Image (cartoon, rainbow, N blue to C red; front, side, top):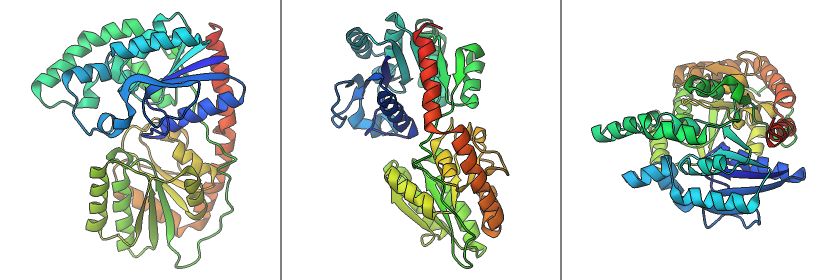
Length: 408
């Protein structure tokens, strides 16, 4: 098949796992013999490839400003970013006319407007829409939970758009086929108005051969329990909660060390360092910044427990599944779709989001009970291979795409 992917960001421009997953899916589909073309935002550092074009009206070189809240857009910019960009519409129509793919896959258009989806739907080509987060919900239904406007006129403008602009966009873009990354995400869109029959849930997969299970043994007496946090540094991922949980354990005299891998906006990194200093755990927390996937694999060998303290509605993250594949015990929150990967007490421990005490209690259980920690890790590794291997994931996507391209 010739598949055309349309997305906002594309590596090396990354905010989180969504962009990395898209690149991996594209690579693996190409390895299976499919031709895959990609249209994304503009960026000087995009790799040179005959089937990759950065032409949508979103500047990836200003990623921090656009995607991480570095600058408040003007009213005109907000309309082009969230609702409709005439330039991106024309670009997408031209690109699809040149490529004439068998199927269009709209992966993510957050901050790239819904114009490419309008163009895809009006092209006459079959379309599949991926919802790995709420990007489509914000664009078609309600921006207020995203923007949280406090100025009265802005709040009024957002609510006016909900009753005027967004109903029109729904008529122009109503997706006939949607792939949701989790049952949690499917539920959001069903409650918004999509039919359950229009949405297929396909959980992501990870390269379990790369994240091979590591033989683990009881922790030697006196050796700190090594905790790992891996992810983007922002409030919703909860690294501040992990630091506060570590502080509680240190004050109890429990030897623990937290390795934090990930980058984020400067203001949040400064805030996190302030929390570390205020809690007095600088000797027990190491900030490594953004690291390579190979480095994460190595941390998976040396660390004992992954802490995944997300406080936002996590759609379905790869990091806990990669840790499970490594045979690590995982302590995660119940936010979003994470419980679809982890069964509390069987393949990991689940705690409420935003609760340092509960997170500390769960880590303490694993620190004092090696048998529990090792049992959870072994069960997690087995489940990762049975349910979340990337090869099986691509099999399911291929089948979905073949049905869609054939009009079934």
